[in-house]
Image (cartoon, rainbow, N blue to C red; front, side, top):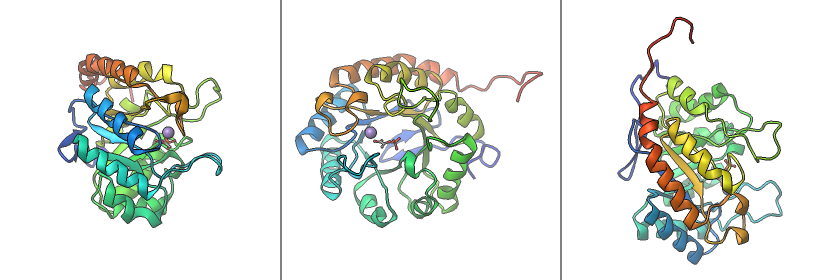
Amino acid sequence: MGSREFHPTDTVVNVKGVKIGGGNAPVVMAGPCSIESEEQLMSTANAVKAAGAQVLRGGAFKPRTTPYSFRGLKEEGLKLLKAAGEETGMPVITELMSEKDVELVAEYSDIIQIGTRNAQNFMLLDAVGELTTPVLLKRGFANSYDDWLNAAEYILAGGNRNVILCERGIRTFETYTRNTLDIAAIPVIHRLSHLPVVADPSHGTGRWHLVLPMGVAAIAAGADGLLVEVHPNPDHAMSDGPQSLTFENFATLMNGVQSVAPIGSSNRVPLRAQPIGV
Ligand code: PEP
Ligand code: MN
């Protein structure tokens, strides 16, 4: 159901009037990795909104590599996120980690994020397939395109057609970067599927100074948007500080996004078939 053959025209996911996909202007979703406090979230929400972000992100349930790291404010964080979204007039996105929290997260969030570690948790995918809330499905860090599209199929098959795919980098032998952001995934998925595709250059690189060049590159490759981590003081962030942008650097990224957006849309015009091609 996610394939172009089944549905040739682009799906546009409409989140409270913010349209993602289908050649609409790129939508940038930005905010802290973790919601830490009302002040941290509100200052970030105001800064990203002023720079042109359209969706506010913030993690309340955090999938951490070790159980001893900060794991999020849970429902208290969801409440802060909803309030910050309402105050700044932005829809919000947050991660759902467990089937037991589906109703809770759906009550507070406008988009439900499924993280890379749960990208093939088929029971969780079935559960969000029963909702109408848009779902942003990250690519599993060891998923092929086929694995990823089949994971999306679980959500679509359940009846939820509002699926956004997110390239967030895959595991490779490189250690300088946290993951390898696969920019080719963007035109490949656009060719294979009608679903919108966004990129996450924060987790895709793990380093703040790579977020701008890779974010801009993803937009130039035709991405329908970005998911970006921003923090008032990255050195003191409770998670993912090294890949979080300051407010100032986020504004610079937004300028880059604006300037390459026309290149991104021109890259989405299908080329003529060539004699040798797939
Ligand atoms: C996140 O967005 O903070 C996150 C944990 O992402 P991922 O699932 O891509 O690691
Ligand atoms: Mn993060």
